[in-house]
Structures are given as C-alpha cells and as structure tokens.
Length: 174
Image 1: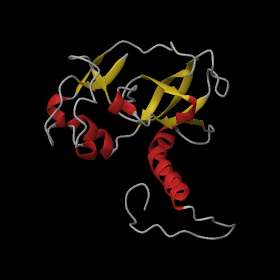
Image 2: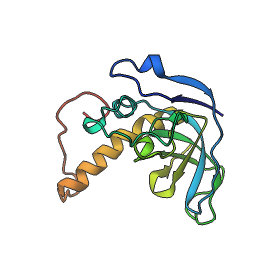
Image 3: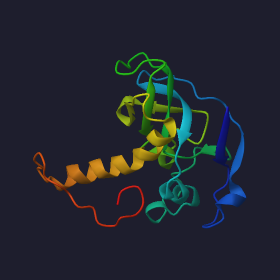
Image 4: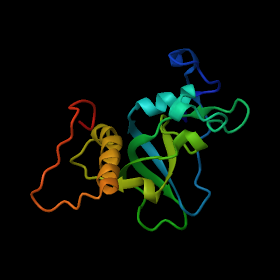
C-alpha cells in the first residue's frame, strides 16, 4: 500500500526533508480486537507533526520508533471503510463507513493513518452516515474528541437548552 512515513526523525521545522511517500506492507488483522480500515481521508494535526519531530509533550525519546529504520507511518485521524474485522469484533462490519482517531497512534507504534489502510480498534471509531463526506468526517474527529473530553472532564452537568461558550474562535474547536 502507499503511505506517508519517516525512517529518520526530522529536526523541528524540517519535516519536509524527511517525509517519504512509498510502498509499505499492508497491515493485516491478527488480533481478535483489530479492525482494518481502508482510509479514504485523513487530517493533519499539529500533534502529528510534533510526534514526528519528537517535540510532542516536550519529546518522548525512543517511543516513536518500532525498531531500526522501519517506516513509521504517522497520523491519527481518519475516515474510511471497514475491510476486515477480528474474530472478537461485534460492533462493526465489513463495508461500514467509520471515522476515528488512533489515540496512541505512532507515539507507541500503533498504526498511523497517512496511508491507504490503517489498523484500529472498536473503541477508536464510530460509524457515520453517507450524508457526511469522508473528508468532513476525518476533519471533525480531533475537534469532537477534544470537546467530548473537555465536557467529560469538567463535569458541567449540562441540562437541556443550556449553552457553553468556547473562547478562542479559531481552529476546529473555537
């Protein structure tokens, strides 16, 4: 499959010098809880860039590489179609349109999403209707994930017709 990847960490601001696009092995479902998705769209987040540069959370040395110079496919957000499910997956089926975020993505060597296929798990994805494009679904994943987390963490106990003001008015959230 085609994928965007790095084999060597770029210095900050020089990602373009190290990013490669080429053929890599297509992942396969081997664990009961895995789901293979044909990626139709993905988004690029600042966190993806920081992970590649090693500056995510101030840098997590050694955690972004599997071994040696194996290609590291990066990216976290995606939308696509389920092509294979593990034996333990009951909530999704082949052919279903899904979008999601590989939360731990390439920080801990989970499958990156800047590729034709990505491996994920049921907890990382949701189904979405045909009325939403793959591009819109992929672009909404990170902002909705952050907003959902903020609402859960703040324990606002919102009631019907109450409103929340998000200050910032920029990016996918404000």
